[in-house]
Image 1: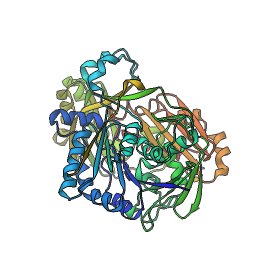
Image 2: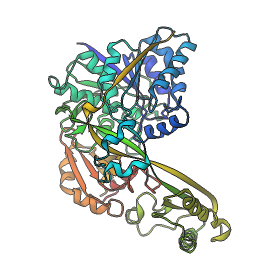
Image 3: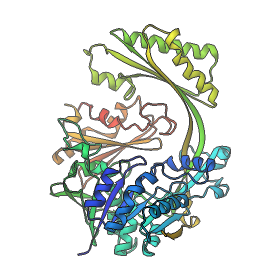
Image 4: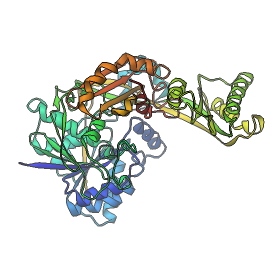
Length: 454
Length: 99
């Protein structure tokens, strides 16, 4: 029976390159995907592109391509990645230049565009924003970018035309995996609901790379992962029924078990019966995992229920500013001094009239993650006083100046606050946020450009 | 006992929504957890953090649960004032729950 082997070379924009190289060298792969686009990444890329028209793609693109392009040619592994971010054309040009420098003539590079609908946003001003219920038009002054989550179609065309490297902007994460499977097995949503469900499942398990092979899993004494320092990235071997095995290359660190697969199966999904992707509404509720060997797990029984009529569009907008500061206190009376410090800052905010929309105080080491009630329960009533605590104060503002004033008040605790404060830092961030609307899928048109390394 | 003795968890985020998986080490504990760790119990447990509804989904195939907590991430991961903007550590809090 024909099988296809797909590896995962990155689970986020800044992921490690060594496991990807290892997979391309030893994984006997047909394809490798690099998933590098978080929700906000494209919006930030659009800002970079506005400042310099040749930028706006993944910052590690050159670093990665220098390492992997020789292996594309040597081992015939085709690369599919969304590292194009806000500027797939420039990402393709940069890749072409590196390939030429390395003497890899004849490599075919495709870039898939069409996701960027920023210039058409005025057509959708009457659409309701998912996150806040406003009409999009009410936010028009602050909008930066709009990118539709496209499906696998553009990538499939690129593979059919023989591309060795396919670079996209915003596509759904699973589409990077769905595309080569549809290309190889000629599945479609109407005739192969089971296979399309399995294809989305494979993509979902691969898209965070090391998170299915023992990364983000270890908990000493409870969940041991061997040789985590040399964590290997995953690969799937898929057959024409859609069933597949998740594994990693022999000799790499990490662990592939039914439990690592279960954690990743449920990661960032909501209703398991309706995981929405542009290519299929996947149903993971009946998925089963079977350990078939050391670091080998068989995945079966995903389904799909058609595909959505609409595409989700991720919209970046200028939101607000956040000002924050931190300072540490030590000794058995550290909490009393940290609390005094927090009270002082709060009073100074009122005295000087700093305009805040939201304000938050954290005692790092005590309540910054779970707040007071759960933290108290975990600690128990008999717990000794902490030896040190780090006070963190943050606030949201509409302008940079107010954020700076708040951050300064925390730093000023050095000479104007309680005894023994140390290690103060301050920071002001201009916040780009994302929101979403839905648009009809017919309104988004993918386009593929081809070039060859000469 | 604490949940961590019989189950493990992983947390994800989308916008202002946090989702926490709860996976029994032994599939036989699926029914025990189904009975004792309801959506309402989880909502009350996280009331200082979660300001919206909690929905529990069951995955019969892998014998695990998915808790979806609305209005939990301080207005969304991009604008939250929290140190852990993504709320990735919340699963470890759930495992400390007494059952």
